[in-house]
Image (cartoon, rainbow, N blue to C red; front, top):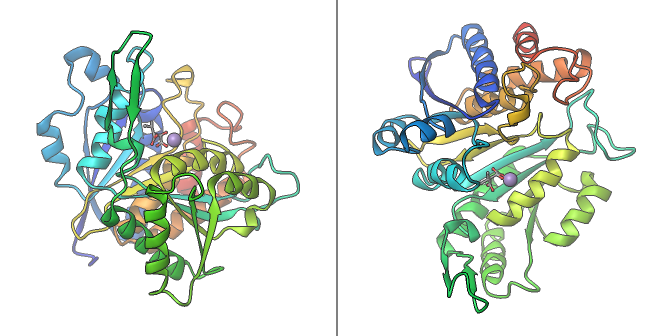
Length: 356
Ligand code: IPM
Ligand code: MN
């Protein structure tokens, strides 16, 4: 990206602690943009539970159309205690992932210096891998239904959809990332081919085919249950994991806790195509009980901002933010848990800015 371009970022603070952490992400973006001479513009979008409760609108066409003009969205959190589960998640978060065809959900798992992991005897050298989660298919498509709902004979189906195109583009992107990362040069497919003998057979065959184009990368395979075991026992085994949407959702919560918890774990919903709209978010939810108290950890959000910069082509700025985060976790913060950081949400943002 040339220095004449303006980086346009859409901000969706969303629910609960979302706006508080988003403000820190923006603070750091602002500071690094000044240091790196990046021209950028921010546009705020009022979306989330409060608006839904007031107006009944979740993701109006007008906003969707507006958002489609951005390459980068920063999302705080989705989930409101007064809105039934599923409504905002499906209507906002999943709607954006699907609408903008963000087929990669990239979740780096890195234990920063000074951050506590629940794994005994493991440190930052042991916990450093990346999960590439397919983000548009599987049981997330909402294909299914009820028969005889509410009766003793009720039947419910929820169908996992896998397409050749969908798994191939995700697998190929993961091979490319493994090559670019240039660490162990090992890509592990995580699936369940011994039970899901149709859908995951498609993934397996496609993985083997694409692996043929990457002779420099070791194409490895784990069943998902074994992966959970290895991730706890030997996290250092992993370099890059590629997996289906639902398994990726589950294993990245496990991975998130290994890297210090939801205050630290960030992810990107990426549409890698030219002009695609990508969206970056902390993995934690809206944490209603901490809302407005200034105690929530913004590190995940700040990491998400770094991922945004990287995806937008500003890799120096991204690296600068990642280094600053590690100075702050390694030498300032007491803990990564909400309320125990030794600093307020906004002070942690300030510390990262000072460390840039
Ligand atoms: C995540 C979340 C979402 C998901 C929910 C909120 C729909 O758990 O981003 O991992 O399942 O993808
Ligand atoms: Mn999840």
